[in-house]
Figure: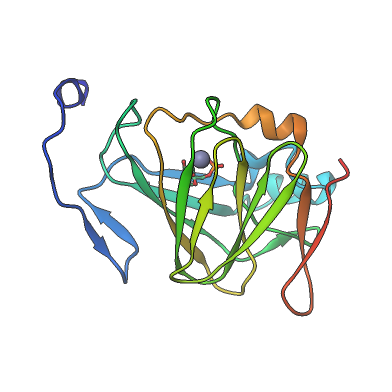
Length: 191
Ligand code: M6P
Ligand code: ZN
């Protein structure tokens, strides 16, 4: 692996399989279970029961083999399962980019939301297949599945962007997304 990445990458094609929502060639994959989402759901008791119970997979991330290095442009597909914990819709951990670089998300399948927070303002973009959500520099971002089926999106981001998860634990995301009879109930963060 390290030898491979020590050479500049040559141009290459990546196959996007629309059925399997997979990228070939494949890079690293990431699976996040409920136990990986400590401190994120408002209802900590429900989170603990789920994490200590069947500890379901909440989301997974597959990627192409473009490395997370400065000036590279990695891509990944995240699939969030449908569900809620204490009424709060299943979501990614969410992160800030330490050097405030931008990112784009493209909705692929299912319905979701892109929640962004710059420390003061909160923005929400409804994500359906074909929606490009633009994450400007300095906005922390979290994705949420608002539907009854898995929600998948493609991300393209600067390789040196990094993932600051502590920022979200410290500052929150401005709002939380809960189940509602129709759509999503966005509530102020509190806790
Ligand atoms: C997208 C990208 C990735 C990110 C993933 C999961 O695919 O933004 O960089 O890792 O979503 O989100 P998180 O890292 O917040 O768990
Ligand atoms: Zn990001």
